[in-house]
Length: 181
Image (cartoon, rainbow, N blue to C red; front, side):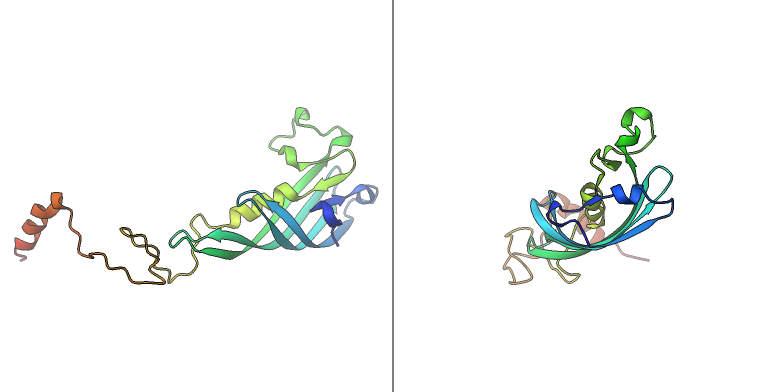
């Protein structure tokens, strides 16, 4: 169970009071602001938290449907995305700050003074990394005509298909005229 309307915020004060190795498991079913496309997306999955000596280790497995645009035909699509991550979070209240020098710990990996662990940045980051650089609506997508811009999945264009750059015309004649041995 997640923490309700605060997106992916978890109160870990009770977990910090338990023995090392104590765990919590949460089923996530939340809406998350997804700034890459300027919308809110539905995210579901599981989050497991493990108390260590001085931190909370988080393992998450999340799924979502990200609204995108096909890179070939520009059609709108809902892309299923799956992300898994393991991250360690440190409490600011115990003196863990950026100044303390915890190496490559990101500022989003600190647990706030109110013992709220915010998984929004990590969820957003890992879901974003799971989105392909050039999403397509399907492998069979024909895209847009380079000349008239018509969607070739819906209509056939009337553009001339044999286009030779006049600057290369002389070279193409030489290649055709050269006999092969």
